[in-house]
Image (cartoon, rainbow, N blue to C red):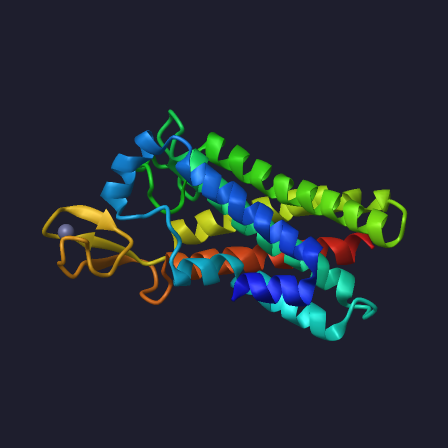
Length: 247
Ligand SMILES: [Zn+2]
């Protein structure tokens, strides 16, 4: 659904950026697999993506692509939508890279709000490695988009568009903003549960032991997928804002 709307309404440059996000995230999820396996067991997370996860990461980008396709490339709002699209994907990529590489960090994560040391995998926990991975993941989307735009311009216009380098810093910053927003929500408003039977924190309302877990903090309706979606919105919003301020 997401791939078809982005390729269909956004064209192959936007679709290509989606492929970069999907392939790089999938490859990274297998990187250091032996060290991640025990964590997956503990937090009941899987490297495969389910429907809600996929919509949370790519839903907004797909929606922007549909709107951009409907208004057309000559509409004054089109450049803003394009940057918002790359900002949303940069945030999704930043968050995935930060999660996949951050859990392998030697130092324990600290809560982004209080600096308190928390167990690996805790929502809102950050490490320098994770934050660097977020910045790299976001910049990677910007670089890929830049190269795809150049390739498309060379083919269709017969020339390069070197001034579009601005895509790289805009994607890098907006992706990092989205990822930091993700951690901030994870540490504050995201629902966190506690299983009294296993004496363990969990993100799920029903612990994997089958016992209903007790809400410890946060909003019951705001789960990890909701937070991921809002993080892509923060990425899209900050990219659009940067473009309005700069140009
Ligand atoms: Zn339990």
